[in-house]
Each structure stands twice: as C-alpha cells, then as structure tokens.
Amino acid sequence: MQGSAHGALLIDGSLACPLTPERLAHATAGLDDAVIRRPSEELTALITAREPYLLRLKQSANASGALRFQCPAAGTSPSLTCPRFDRLHQRGPSRSTAVDLTDARQRAAHLAAKPRGLPPQPDHKTGELPKIRHQHTITLHPGDLGHLDKFRQDLPYLSPSWRGTYAAARAMTEGLNGRLKGHDLDLSDPKNRLAHGRVAQTILVALLVAVANDHFLDAWRHIHQPPAEPDTSAEILQIPAEHIDRWALAGRSRPPPAP
Figure 1 (cartoon, rainbow, N blue to C red):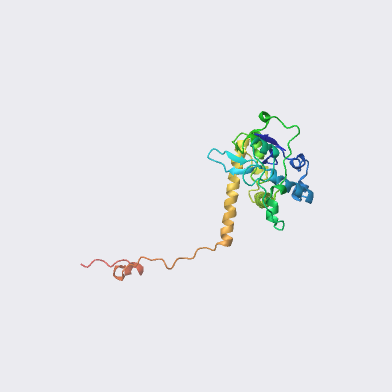
Figure 2: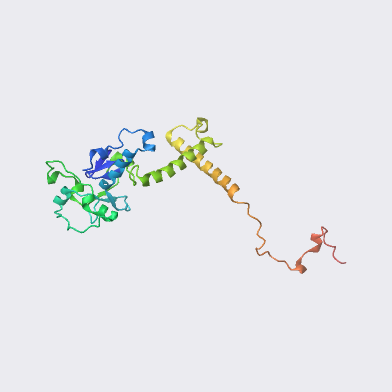
C-alpha cells in the first residue's frame, strides 16, 4: 500500500476501496524480484481477489489530465457489496431474482457471489468518512497523489493484462539496451559520454540513441528491402529523330559553313 487519494487506497499503483482487506492490500509487500517474475499460486489468488475492490475507470483523462473513477460498490453492476455504501446512499436490498445455478455466468453476477466490504465496528461518523464514500465517483486531478503519482498505473499490478503488456515492453527495452551497449557507439562506455552535468549527459545520450536507431533502421532496410530497380515503365521524353544532332553523337564537330 503506497498511499491514498480522496480516501481511496493506492495499492501497487491502482486505486482501491478503503475497505480492502489488509491481506490483499499487502499481498506483494517484501517480495523479491524472483517471486514477482514467477508468482506462486497463492500470490496469484491474492492478486485475483484484489480485482473486485479496485476502483473502475469511469471517464478517461480529459484535456487537463483528470481521471474519473467509480466506487466498486456503485453502479448497476457493482463488483462488491458494501453495507456502508448502502447506508449512506439509502440503497435498499435488491429485488430477489431467480438464478440458474447451472449457469456459471449468472452465479458469478449475483450479489451473493460477490465479496463484501466490512466496515469497522463501530463505524466512523458520516462526516469523517472519505470522499469516495460520499460520492459514487471521484475525480483524480494531476497532483492529487503528489510524489506518489509516479507509482500509479492503468493496469492492475501482476494481473494477466499487466503481465502480458509488461513482458513485451521489458523484452523490447532489454533488447534495445543490449544493442546500444553492444553497438559501435557503446553507450555503456563512459569514454563515449565525456560531457559533464546531468543535462549535458541526457542530451548526449538522446543523440547517441537517435544515431543508433538510424543505424538499426538502415541495417534493417538493407536486409529486408532490396534496392529499387530502375522503372522502365515510366514515360521517357522522346526526342524526334530530325532534332537529334548526329554529328555530336558520332563524336565529330559540325562541318564548316558553306562559302
């Protein structure tokens, strides 16, 4: 758990319900890189159990970069049930409906199958509750998380979508790093980066990467794109035969003028 904003918890880069069980909130605390790369069945189960507590994106970023998130207990298809939310918003019990127990989708969609947020007993007073409990949605403006904003990410940490995206991005990054270090420019050699100062080093590294990328693209073109053949189908300017200087073509000068 990294922080909070408007009462919502920032858990591994995702905003979550303030009633998220501590066991789920701290599921990744203290884990080393080897465990993260190959999560166990227990860790995978905890990551999956987190999903119903995560705030859902209600509206993508606007021109100012503000995002709108919805409480997981709000809406017509909530991902969890919450007695505190029902009390504050005076939402009565839902009308009972028949469920086909042989249909896995209907069983999963029923409120009885969803996790239940458990507020502390006795619960906080209404005026002391966080903003996420007084409203169905909250707006996260740039700067609301302060220095913690660098931790926020759009995909839930270690979820299947996160791992699929991260694996491809990591492979591309590590591959590019290896090529830059093994390239003739050798970005890892301090002798090729003699400029002093952070700004000068940043600009120099950007120029070296740009030059290396140009070399990579040029090598790819030589391998995958054969040289263009002359276009014989293009229209060529035809000069009438009577206008051709035969003497010049034969390598001789014009005859002297007649006396």
